[in-house]
Image (cartoon, rainbow over all chains, first blue to last red; front, side):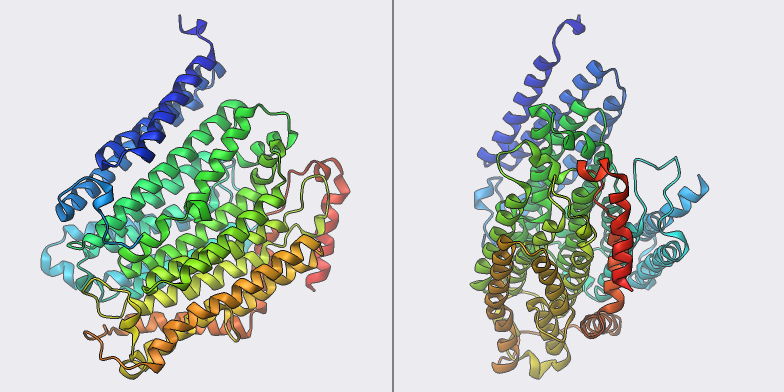
Length: 103
Length: 525
C-alpha cells in the first residue's frame, strides 16, 4: 500500500532524480544529454509534487504537476529545435565546440 | 468577474495582438508584405496602455475580485511597471521596422513573439503566487529563446539561443524544485502567506532549502553575479533589437518581480534560518555584482558584450535598493516605501539601454564582429544623428547630468545615505567609485565615434519609423533628466502599494502600520 511508505522516501527519491539531472547538466557536454538531464530535473520536481499532494490530501499538487508537464513539453520542443539549428551550423553536439561567442 | 476581466484587459489585449500578428504569416505572400506589422503591434500595445492608464486614473488600489485574488495583484505598482513595459516594447517594435530583412527574421514570428514575451513580463510583475510567477517566467523565457535564435543562417544567434536555453532551463528547474518544497511544507504558494510562515521562523530545513532554491533561480534570471554567465553571450549573439528588449524591458520586469518578492513575499524571511543576515547578503551580492560587471566591461571589444556587463553592473546598483527594506525585528517603518527611487532607476536604465541598442541595430550587419568597437569609428561624420543618440544613451547609463541616469543614481544613493548606517556609507562609497570606473568604458565608444576616422563597411539602415522611436526615447531620457519630479512622484505613489507587510513587529502593533502612511503623505506635499 502506498500509504505505508513514508513521505520522506518519496522526497529522497525525487531529490536523487533532481540531483542526477543537475549533475548531468553541469558535467555532461553533449547537448542532447543535457536536454534529457533537464527533463530529469523537472521529473524530480513532479515526483515531489505528487508525493506532497498525496500526503497532504491536497489535489492542488496534481494540478501543478499538469502545469509542469505541459511546460516541460513546450520547453523540450523549443530546445530540440535549437539543437537542430545549432547542429546545422557546427555539425557537432558537443557544447565545448560552440565557440563563436567569446565567452 | 467582469471587473476582474477589465483589470486583466491589458494582458488580454497584448496576447491577442501577439497571436493576431503571428497569424498574419498565414496570409498569401503579397498581402503579408503589405501589412505594417511594426505599427500593428504598436497599435495593439497602445490599446493596452490606454486601459492601464484608465485603471490608474480610476481606482488603482481597488483589490482584484474573488476570481483572481491570490493569483495576481493589480495594484499601483503593477500598473506602473505595466505602463513602462508596454511603452518599452512598443518602441522596440517600432525601431525594429526595416530590420527584419537585414537580419533575416521571419516578420510575423518576430513581432508575434515580441508581444508574447511582453505577456510573460506583465504576468511576472502581477504574480501574487509563486506558481503564476513560475509560469510567467516560462512564458517569457520560451518566447525569448525563440527570439534570440531567430536570426536564420547565423551560427552566433543559434549558439547564443542554445546557451541561453540551457542556462535558463537549469534556472527554471531550480526555481521549480524550490517552489515545490515551499508548497509541500506550507500548503500555500501565495507570496503573502509564504512570507508570514517564513517570518514565523520555525519552519523545517526543507522550507529554507526551498526558499534558497527559489532565490538562486531568480538570481539567474536577474543576472546576479555568480549566475550571470548567459547574459554576455545572449547580448553578443542575439539580433540587436532583441537585445534591446532583453536589457531594456525584460531586465525591468524581472527586477520589478524581485521587488515584489522582497516586499510582499519572502525574501528577507528566508534569511531567518541562515547564519548571516539579509542585509549582509544583499551588500555582499550587490558589491560583487557591480564590481565584476564593471571590471569585465572594461576590456570588451564588442559594444554589445560591453553593454551586457554594464547591465550586470546596473543590477548591482539596483540591488543596493533592496536594503531599503527594514530588517527583521528593527522597525524603521518610515522607509518602507523607499523603492520609489528603485523604480525610477529601473525606468531610466531601461530607456537608456533601449536607445543604445536601437542605435546599434541601425549599424550595418555582416561579418563576425557585428558589435565591434571599430565599426563605430567615424560614425559622427557618416550619421551625426545616430552618433549623438548613442552618445546620449551612454552618458545616461554612465550617470552624467543632464540625463535620467544621473538623477536616478543620485536619488537611489541619497536614500541609502539617509539610512545613516555606517556600513551603508561604505556601500555608497563603493557604488560611487564603481560609477567613476564605468565612465572609462562608457566613453570609449564615444571616442571612437567622434575622434576616429573610419569608412564603415556598409550603409547604416534608415527608416522613418525607427528614427521616430529613437527620437522619442532620447526625448524621454532628457526630459526625465531635466524634470524628474513628475515621474519620481508617480514611482513613489506606485511603490507605496508595495508595503512591507510581514515583519512581526509591524503586524503586532496596529497603529504603527498606519503611522508611516500619514508620515509619508506629509513629506510628499
